[in-house]
Image 1 (cartoon, rainbow, N blue to C red):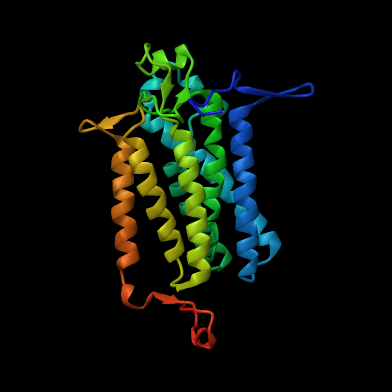
Image 2 (cartoon, rainbow, N blue to C red):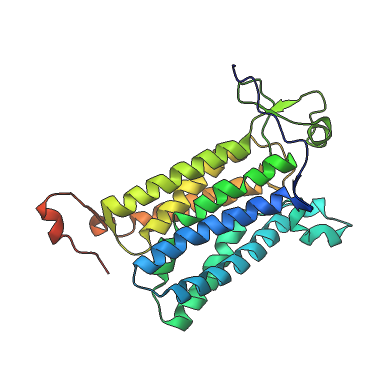
Length: 279
């Protein structure tokens, strides 16, 4: 059988026995659990206790969810104009990943200072965990039939029902770019790259998180250029595109700062025993 298009689910809920679960919320929850698992493993490998890892996770998740929703509401405020009671209905969709990362990073910086632990230990442990959670969470958009791209007839085009297609301004089209799938694949590849870089190279503290920001922003930038959902604009350009450009510039500047001595290849021969981690 040749793939001609990707069907959308018939419902945005999952029935498990007598339970009727909103699929979007379930995907977000599964993404959080996966990210928490990988972070916990990496953080404890750095010598920190399991209890501390759990505490960091709880604060990061709370801050991330709040920041993600605030970012979404700010950048898509016209959607809720006149009906602000829906602004906190997260289960309906609408979480801005840049807001989650920025808010969680700010809270984690304060937390690290209070606990007297290196912020880089938290950041670098989170670096591959974040895109793992994002890759899973994006499937919530598939269930909600939202945030898809321009119309296309590619073999992997996503089938969208007439209602969501019309609301996006394409009443005569029924297959679109599956941007949720693009971002999922990109993020999973980013997880692999970050794990490989973390083992293959000895980086200055914090550099792995900088690589995550750069990798995520690059992928999200091109995905934003093909999305057709409503979004606030600045100078005729989607706000998220400006944000991604700012993140790319900022992360590149950060990674290049002092770049002469921040990366060393970790080889398998005896010389690797002489390579020391930089503090």
